[in-house]
Figure 1 (tube, one colour):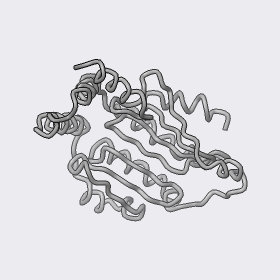
Figure 2: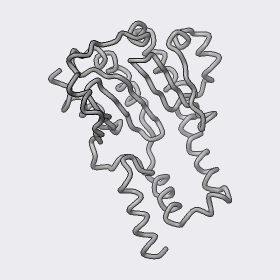
Figure 3: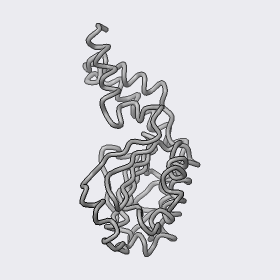
Length: 222
């Protein structure tokens, strides 16, 4: 690999907010500012009580079940609009959208989300990427991109089960905070990150292992 490709490899890894190798190991979080008018009107906007809020005690154990014992590896919870989005390890290129009323129905969960252990789900992730790397089209990628993927594969660690449980166990509290409450959250086992938006402004992207510290450093005063 020539010097230009070496430069490209390092640049690709550095210039994305969440790159092919995930958040930088030295980063606690990444904050992206949004519409400043949201900050200015934070205390004037009343909290909207959605279907998620009305069913949160029933819903959270179900979402934990999906992430730990069923096919879901990526989960979006829209507290304001009542939207639940999931991505399945058995259909990884497609996102599915569900209503809360369906998600709290046990028979719906049984039909929609096949059972698979957490360990099996992680192995399927590895198998999918191994298959991709062995595809002839993949072999036509620039050398620096193949190096990036190899580096990521060698260092990859999925989100731990206790990290999934820690995140989900805090969501009711984050939603009920009196001022800066959560609007939506995305949890990804593959990337081991948590993406959150609060009612004030912007987006917070936190590595799963730093999630507890993020809450302690930024929200303990709430």
